[in-house]
Image 1 (cartoon, rainbow, N blue to C red):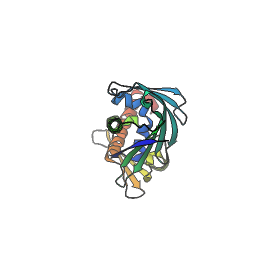
Image 2: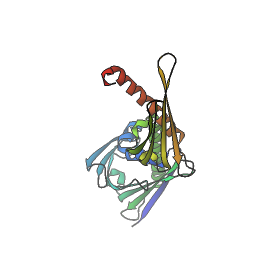
Image 3: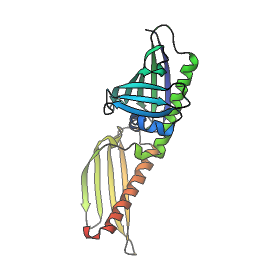
Image 4: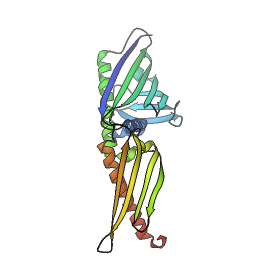
Amino acid sequence: MTTASIEVEVTSTFPAETVFKVFNNFHTIAPKVSPQIFKSIETLEGDGGVGTIRLFTFGDDVPFESGKFKQDVIDASNFTYNYTFFEGDNLMGILDSINHYVKIVPSADGGCVFKQTVVYNCKGDEKPPTDVLNFEKDLYEKTYKAIEAYAAAHPESVPFISGKYKQGAIDFRNFSNNYTFFEGDNLMGILDSIDHHVKIIPSADGGSVFRQIVVYNCKGDAKPSAETLNFEKELYEKTYKAIEAYAVAHPETY
């Protein structure tokens, strides 16, 4: 079988775990950020896992109308995501299928490198022309960058799934509460644990100041990205304000 291929490689400041989660939501994010490329992505069969079949309907900037693909691999531990187009005019009448191999490689600075290899499996000797391959390479690079930009602007779209924590000291007299996350994808694969130190300080006007220090204990040199730290800081601030608003609305609870 004759094949052709392209390689896409994009450096990211986001951790590999975050990029992998973003790419797992490709079907919902891509039509929002690049409707001129992806008019819609519809799930035809499956629940999003391996074996799921989706229909891409392409936008006005793409010379094809549609393509169906099947999910082959989703490996969260190794940050790999593979799928195969098996039907549609994006096969150009000369291809049996198009394999996509996505690999997110963690980097030492806490970011990662997004790598995508696309293999065009030809029916015969005829291959896609160079201008088509260059167009698709540019398309995949632009799409990834658009999705990453969306994730940066909408961090709630790539939340962590879970985390286990152990309660440390609770001191009612000094209004302090400490706890430690020791397991979960919120450790991002680069942390041993996350320590939370909460202290409520009475103020002269009868109110108080809520202070929370979060310490990220890294396994090695890789640290959470600035975007992740800012996202979590904002998340904790919003959570406190929501809890305070609830307490005001339900004084009988306290």
